[in-house]
Amino acid sequence: MSRKFTETSLVVATHNRGKLEEMQALFAPYGVQIISAAELGLTEPEETESTFVGNARIKARAAVRATGKPALADDSGITIDGLGGAPGVYTADWAETPNGRDFHKAMVETWAKLEAARAPIPRRAQFRCTLVLAWPDGDESVFEGEVAGQIVWPMRGDLGHGYDPIFQPVGYDITFAEMPASEKNVISHRSAAFRKLIAECFT
Image (cartoon, rainbow, N blue to C red):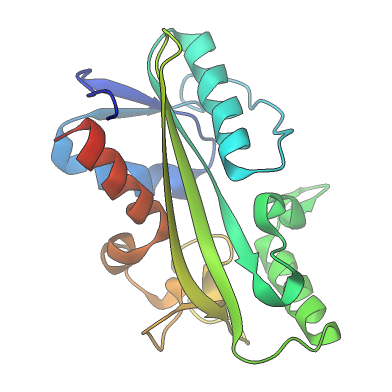
């Protein structure tokens, strides 16, 4: 059984605005103030692990050390069957450029890799999220969520962030980027992990 969360505020270890807004929306019903690592001026630790849980732990622990407060971190990404599970933990790395992250470039290159691999259609993929909630005394809880879908082309929609324009979840004929946040937040990988967190720590 995970530890109950009784604080009024929570540090979320992210510098990603889209991720922060998603977290704020998810936490809104629970009266918890969300403060991002970016707002606190915390530096982003180097993510050196090869798993989502490993990298989430690095971020959560760094935020706890810097603030002395409980911190929540997520590591998430997309795994694509036709690319052997890539990009996985390297999802954001595929978007890196000398001028910052460019997910348009990443999606173009991802589709090109699938074409080169002659990956079968539908090109199955999963968005995965691992949340780590860490306390200053070293206690930690881990929650995982995923949503299955397929990679589609061309890109569709201008909502969402990251790889959302090429990810069509199972049971839908629209991409995450064509879906209002209120709808996406019900079925997303992050919301799946978040529901587990709420059930264990907030109810």
